[in-house]
Image (cartoon, rainbow, N blue to C red; front, side, top):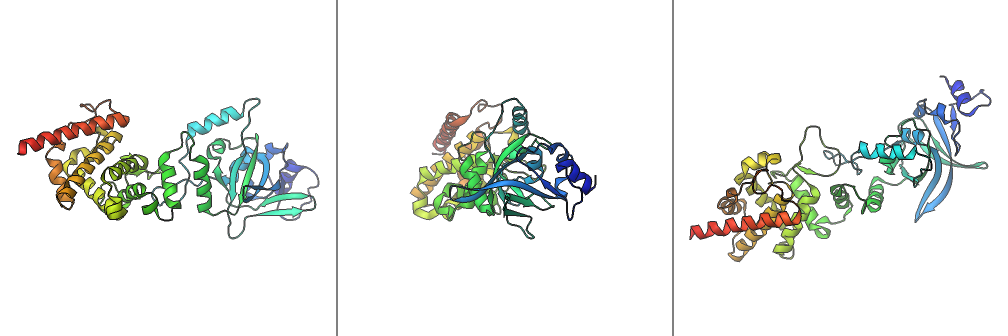
Length: 378
């Protein structure tokens, strides 16, 4: 289909066109079926919009076929390897569920939320003319960043269903991240580790604002850490890479350790992170077999992480009372006395334990084993 044929199919009228073909997408977009079969990114597209404001931000509002919006937008999914992006990984089941719903009679949804990022050369502009306000999008890569609509649009390629949208104008990626995190902070089903990671990147001084999150991320990034690159952040993972635990699980366990030890007012987040890192290095040494096969043992599952961090607090407090520096060697010496006496396997005494009650039971078992080991050593 050449440009003249495309213009006749889309908007009718005179086919004597000067310059690039222009696609006028009206709010109803009755002739959208031809548009959806063409590669819309090759052409200059003009969408009628309205100027408006949302809170303190300037926005535009409009409506277009879902297939058009799908073609012209993208989701900035967090890449856990590079740290770029902020969206959760795509959930095909969630997206298909919405596709089924929106095709039903009487279905509707709140407006999709986008942002038009600044780009060089500029690929979009808002035109205020005597006949109305238009968003002009030049050919090239998609320009709408999907701030809050990834799963609603994800399975609607080619769909003629019109959807309302609102788009911010020229927000930075950091500003997008903040809006996404605020909107989805209480959303059910959203990966809590992703929210934690986004909040960490938005913090001015994470060590002061959220020391438990600071320490959990340090475990995931520090050279020599057995957790290095092993915490799930809620984004895309490198193919074939296995995660041992989620960021949320580890940071909540660290929070319990900080509360039990009161270490932050004494030595600050940096010292606390060194103690926690040394403890987990010791765990990986003493329980080497279990650490190397995490799927077969409870050591890095929720109850294991919580239970071990509670034992870490006990060992730290004992060291402090005896004026001992809690190094890797100290923790190894302590753990070797009792921790291997527990069957950590999935089919041992820990089978079926979960949640806070399961973590408490595991902690009590470790306490009992430690007490017995101490009595034998007297």
